[in-house]
Amino acid sequence: MARTVQQRSIKIDGHATSITLETSFWEALREIAAMRRTTVYRLVEQINSNRTGNLSSSIREFVLREYRDYYKRQERPVRQQMREEVA
Image (tube, rainbow, N blue to C red; front, side, top):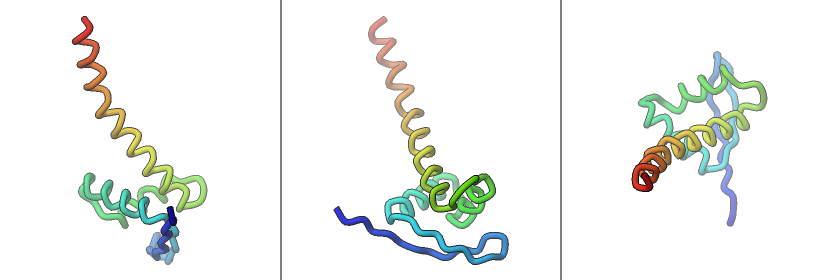
């Protein structure tokens, strides 16, 4: 499977910054921004303000955390239902 990488330029604090991410991460970032009713630009600003390392890596970690948290929220009701059925 070929990995498609896209580079985009975005201004953060008045400076142009290049961000290189796999297409799937750009798509996920757009989905998260839409769910939060914000823009990718604002989301990247937020990630940038909290990062400790490379911006592209911080974005990937953010996306992973968001999807893990979403999965946990979806899984919790299923586990509760299973406990109720056993009891």
